[in-house]
Length: 124
Image (cartoon, rainbow, N blue to C red; front, side, top):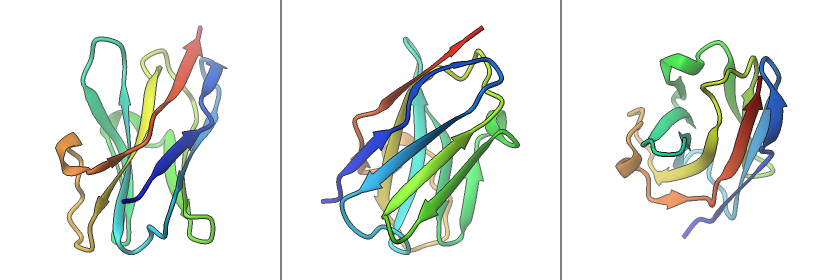
């Protein structure tokens, strides 16, 4: 069972940047679909971005501002967040799904493994 550990959250001003990291306990590239979700207080946990062998995928609200990438040697996935907005604060979760197909999974229930989350706060 793969374990995921997020880091990199914190407080940043509007317009600023943060880079989140998701370290996996085993090799993930090629056999897993890795995604970032976020959950603000009182709201659902929503898809943000994902990466798999077939490409990267983003929800519309972060396109052009966020970038997901991976380091195979470190078994780590990153989420570079730029131009942060007041609507971006949330707990950000890393998630994984065993997947070798090309389908871009984006639903919470599609993912089987979750990290503990890291808080992102944006100040005005």
